[in-house]
Amino acid sequence: MSFFGRNIKKIRSLKLLSQQAFAEVFDLKRATLGAYEEERSEPKIDTIIKIANYFSIPIDDLLTKELTINQLLKFNTNLTTDADQMEVAALTKVPIILPECVADYLNHHSKKNFIADLPVMSLPISNEKIFRAYTVTDLEMANQDVGFYPNDVVVGELVPKSAYKKLNNRTPVIVVTDTDILVRRFFSTDKGYVLRADHKGIDDQVFNAKQINELWRIRYVFYKRIPETSGEISDQINLLRMEIEKLKK
Image (cartoon, rainbow, N blue to C red; front, side, top):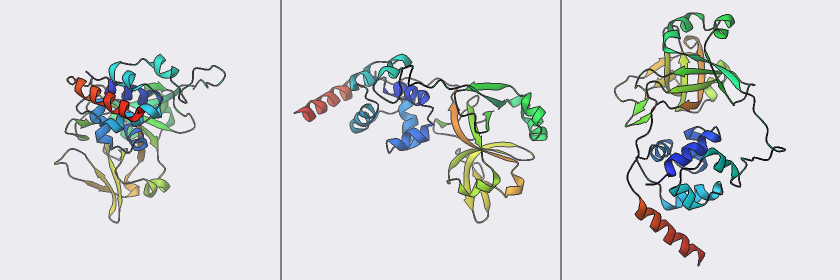
């Protein structure tokens, strides 16, 4: 079996990159990267070579070994183990909205004392920005085994109202209204701000800026589920090795 999916997911987590951000570096679609990580699909040879070269990881290691964090740190990338160069990131405490906290959050989200009493998760991310974590409770942002599932945790960065129109369409967001907390894709239109679910059959919702109490751009996702493993791809590995030998000649 190939360890490619597990390894790139581990690299992405180590680099604190979302699937979208990682995919954009290698000209991939986020859904395609998700399929690789969940081992539902195998990458093309040129994709494997591109990622291996970018992180200076031997292709055989990327495909045939489940790499540890320590091994990844030792490869020749900007991930360094040199104590003189490494900056130890302080952990930022991010308030998390658990399912049992939703009703209270809708009523008290603007009260500092209430936010201070919320449970927190500590993450190695910037403490110069405001973040909020939210526990997904439904399948409204899941589509064909890709997306957010119940008990996944999404972490969003606060977007001020003045910046709503600057958000790219399809950006995943957490939106707090008077009556609900929604995880959706954001679209700015002439009719207002459209929130769209990935799951088919769910109607779009349209809001104006006054109807949105808080909007958080999703930056990080922590998946609760464990991806299923796929079958052998030894033939693809052998083919890859043959292509590499051709390139050397």
